[in-house]
Length: 69
Image (cartoon, rainbow, N blue to C red; front, side, top):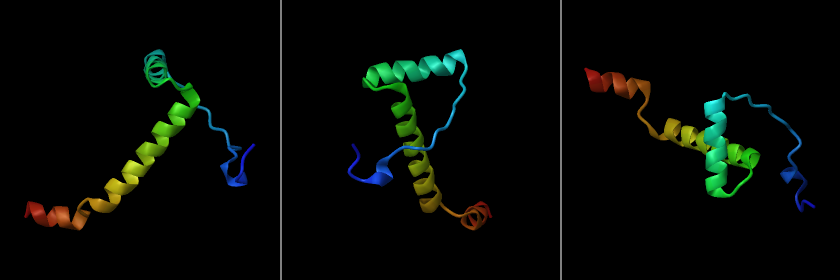
């Protein structure tokens, strides 16, 4: 089924949401025509990539302190 064994998803995470959060996920999944779990995984991975990129490209704390002086 998988050409590369590294692509097998064998680690599970559980996520608890309230009704409003669940509704947001369900609406987005319906809009994107995707199942909810793969959509949540996609959103989480995009957020992590964005945070890594933003953390590497923004000014350092030292630079920000000097800008205020």
